[in-house]
Amino acid sequence: VKDAYARIYAAIRRIPKGKVATYGQIARVAGLPRRARLVGYALSILEDKSVPWQRVVNASGEISMRALSFTMPEQRAILEDEGIVFSASGRIPLKRFQWRVSDSGRPE
DNA sequence: AGCCTGACTCGGA
DNA sequence: CTCCGAGCCAGGC
Image 1: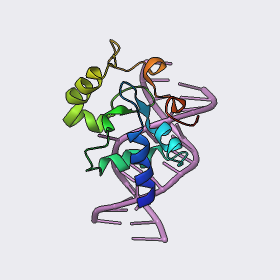
Image 2 (image 1 turned 90 degrees about the horizontal axis):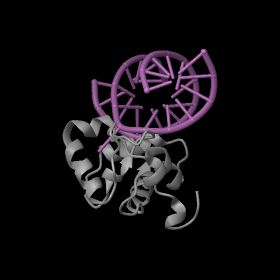
Image 3 (image 1 turned 45 degrees about the vertical axis):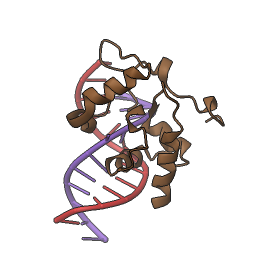
Image 4 (image 1 turned 90 degrees about the vertical axis):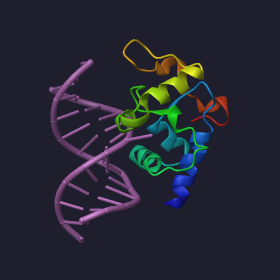
């Protein structure tokens, strides 16, 4: 389990600047298919600030609710600073900004 | 052990 | 687009 978290964090750290990834995608990359919730849980207890958790969004390209309560404006600002554009509905067009593992290693 | 909750996702209606 | 149900799984009580 500890090992699973380590892999999740490692996967998140691989997300290149200017891209975002979904929880499910991170789970797959980390070798934990179908463990999207575990990814969310891992982030909830995260204390390591070297992990760019702000690049992890839900399947709809939105910043997940729990984060909204305390970092939404900040997270959005960081992402926009990295070049990510939010749509009028406040979502990220995954078509354009979703990280493709092939960009930095093996394909999914 | 059982039950509930939660930074999730996906298919179907 | 929204709502539901089902899968998943760690933690707290």
